[in-house]
Structure formats: C-alpha cells, structure tokens
Image (spheres, rainbow, N blue to C red):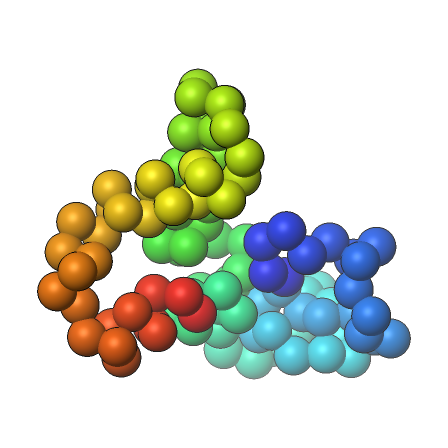
Length: 98
C-alpha cells in the first residue's frame, strides 16, 4: 500500500489489506480498526485526507508543472511543505519519512 509500490512489484505472497495494513486478507473481509501504512494514521491507506497522500499529490503536480526528475520534485516539495526543515529534530524528520 505504499506509494510507488504496486502489486506487480511486491514480493509478498499474500494480499495486504488497504484498511488495516496487515497481510492475508483484503479490505472487504476486514473488521479491524483502520491503520495507514503510509503515515501511521487512524485511516485506511486509500484515504484522500492522508497527509502522505497529499504530499505525494503535490510532488506529482510539481513534476508535471516543472519537469525534472521525481527526486528533484520530491526535494522541492518536501522543503516547501516543511519550511522549518533545518530546525526539525532527528525524531521529527524521521516521523516525516514514515
């Protein structure tokens, strides 16, 4: 369920649930509490309100409008989103990458 990691590139033998992030079942069979594998929030990985989803959308928009590589777009957008990037603690920076 991580961005840029499609099912055709995944090496896990079983499906991963978009709702809870655990393997062995799919969303329609899940009754667990939602858990996002991208931001660790209390919502499904498919949520359009997920902060990581919104960041990925901003990166794609930047790349489309400005060209360059995906990495260049990511660096430009992450710095824009996190204007205080130089003053963040290691723990804060680590949380952002998850």
